[in-house]
Length: 182
Image (cartoon, rainbow, N blue to C red; front, side):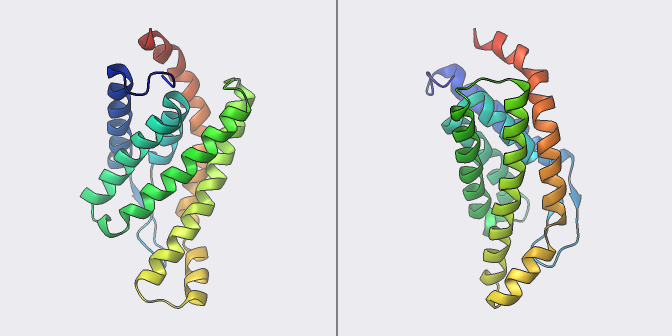
C-alpha cells in the first residue's frame, strides 16, 4: 500500500486499522494506579505498530492517530489527546525508519527488532508525556520528573506487550493482508 497511499483500498485499510485500534483499547483496558495521569494496560500500541508495518508511515500513523486519539477524546482524556497523537508520530517515525533500514524485509528477526525498539520508544515517549502532563497541572519540574518515573509501570507492561505481540499479530495477519491487497 505504500505506493498507493490515497487509493480507496489504502484509505479503507487505514480506517479499518483505526477502528481496530480503538476497539483494542476499549475492549481490554486495565487501569493502573499512578502519580501522574490515569494510565492503563491496553493493546492500542501493539495494534498501532502493526498498522504502521502494514500500511507504511503515513497511513499507519494516521490509523494510530485516529484510533488512539479518538479513544482519548471520547473517554475522558481529551485534554492530553494531542500528546498521545504526538507519541504516535514519534513511534511511527522510529518504526518506519528501522523498517526502511531493513529494506522492508519482514523477516522474523527484523520484525522482532522493530517491535522491541517500538516498545522502548513508547517507554521514552510516555515518560516525556507524563512530564508534560504533570507540568500542565502546575507541578514543578523536579516533582514532575520523579512522579513521571514512578508512573511508568503501565507503560512498561504495554511496551513488553508491544514487543511480544507485534510480531505474533504481524505474522498471523500477513498472509491474509497480502491476499486482500491483490
